[in-house]
Image 1: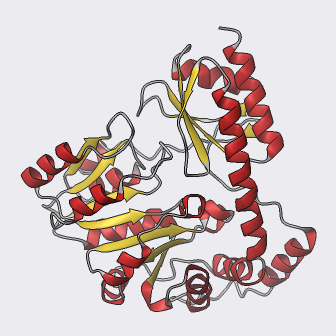
Image 2: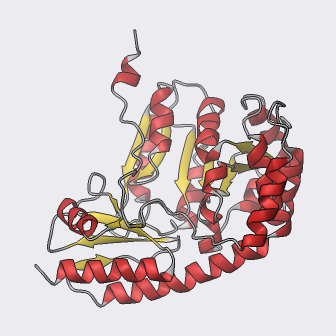
Length: 349
């Protein structure tokens, strides 16, 4: 008796294929000193695993609030941003009203809408991977969605959308979610507007700054909005270990994260410039911790397979954008292995 909307649902695609070099999931390479690992282990050993964690994760909220320049009252925490996307899709508007988002983008926006039976209102990006404002406004005025998601920077394309276009769509009476999962690599944000307006919230995450295994997503908004969203938050949704370790990293070892981000930014530029030298691909500029590129010689599926044969795993997005792939920026030696494998594959055409 499973619902039709679930039976027809395409689940979120994760990449679990084994490879010597894994550059498929946009994780930040974070090499912790042995002393830091020891201190984390000591903190974890003191966790009373037979007890529930703080349901409000107050200490973690305070640490996040300090790092992001907001108040704890402006924060809702989720088991990753995915959970917060579900909460927003539940809380904003009635289910008969649709959810708008430009595509290609993070697939959880559409998945959460379909799970709830909400209409998915999708508009293809233009040739520059920016919002097609005219088509968006035509569809919004026809379908009248009440909720919009914008990945900023966008995943998988890596660019930030035009801010004025996003605001114009919001002005149509659409509650706007700005998903800033990759904020630390772009430096661009709608945070000020999220703190001042009741029709805008920002999503952040610890997953893209070296703590993907802790599953801590962050919603930031005006206190009145946060209070309503928090009503539907599942109890104890942030585990005890996640709370303890995340607080330790944010409070005492944040400089390690900041150093890793700076290394990534330097590597992103280096890898981008090296990829531009290669014939057989088109490379797109990125404001995230990955690079999106198009295969011109081979199909995207074939290039993905050939790289994997050389021990390098990237993400194949040919099912979204023809012959396009995404490579995460890793450690220098991982990036060199990718560049070497890509060069070898392209020169065999």
